[in-house]
Image (cartoon, rainbow, N blue to C red):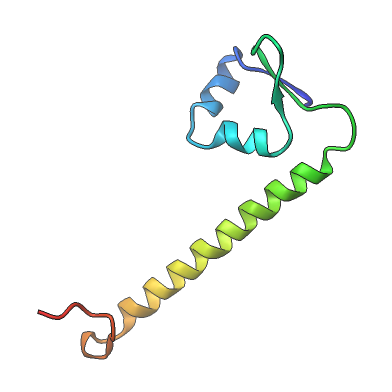
Length: 87
């Protein structure tokens, strides 16, 4: 789709999720003059979409690394955890 009607109930439900509108804006959509639609300008949209996908992929990698580090730390005995809180 190149034009998203913001008053559409299903679209409004999706855009009610945190960050959903920001993803569309980062992908190149822009509000129309009346503010009733988000519109993808004419032309090749692959640039902004590619950047949006790269951003999401990078965030996912970071979350996976944090999960891995947390799992690794949780698997270590408390006496070997260098970051264990000291009393």
